[in-house]
Image 1 (tube, rainbow, N blue to C red):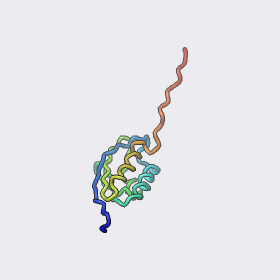
Image 2: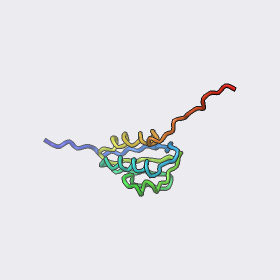
Image 3: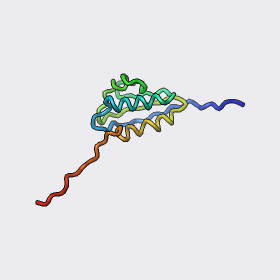
Image 4: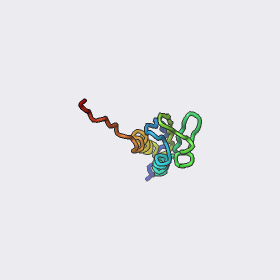
Length: 108
């Protein structure tokens, strides 16, 4: 009986940094810790630099501020699962999204 072999897959997606302070140390570490759970090769790119998403020093080099568009490229047998886990970090602003508060109405 032959062992089942998963096909190597490449997936890519663009994400935008939406949290106020960008990809600073805490969200970068969240990204790195999550990336390291997968066997696939995971890279993140800005316009000029492509880095290993499994290295905190590399991810910090992106200096990604709010509004920065990054491209995530994942190669490997668990690429789809990795992308499905990583993209929500960016979409949720790494849990740093401020809730909009409105001023209470006042009668004058």
